[in-house]
Image (cartoon, rainbow, N blue to C red; front, side, top):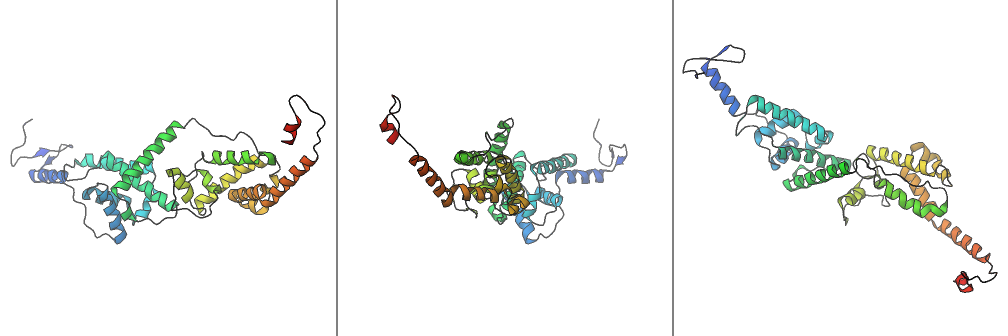
Length: 314
């Protein structure tokens, strides 16, 4: 089909004639999209600057900002990884339909990954009760967070068929040391609401440790997770349910039934009560006295080939 000459008209998809002037206008619109101009507030501009630092051009930043409708960077904490990906897919569809060419809107796979990293970075700081400073989210920070998310996805995929479990329930004081280590190991394998292992709920330190030193990223998260807030309350209740199930049939049952602990399902409170009882000075003194009594009650009767007097007194 020969192209239309000057003064002629082409027909659109509906068959209607499209005047040459309108054709030219459509070509201009396809080549470059100019977002509506507006004055950004301080917090809005900081978000725009953060998007620029991860390589998103001005046209795409403006469109992305309009779709999100966020007054500040903190609002990204509301978006999940899937919702960010859905938004990016919508933007790519928009780009394809309008046939934007160079110097216009574009969104690479790398840019999408950095957007997901930005939302995760914001969410982590919000959940950790840390101040969100957009200027702190640099390209290096985006790359580090993107790598962490990739490693996390790989770890989750590798462990999808693995279900951690406790081998024994806690019934007698003689098993306390093993029970304590088993609980800590078990909770280290269960993730809480803020993607931090549940063992943070029963850590020794009450206040977050911001300074370290830390040998792993997981160790840093456990040390920094706040012991207050809605996320902690839910994780705390889950830890209580786990400890209750493990202690219900043994001598630690009375601690489960402490009114203040039971009514609030306070997992950290229950763990603290068990530690104070089984690791406190009073309990250690009791164990020492019982050991002395047991020793005083021993009597050597006669020597056996496999049990000599030297073995008895040793």
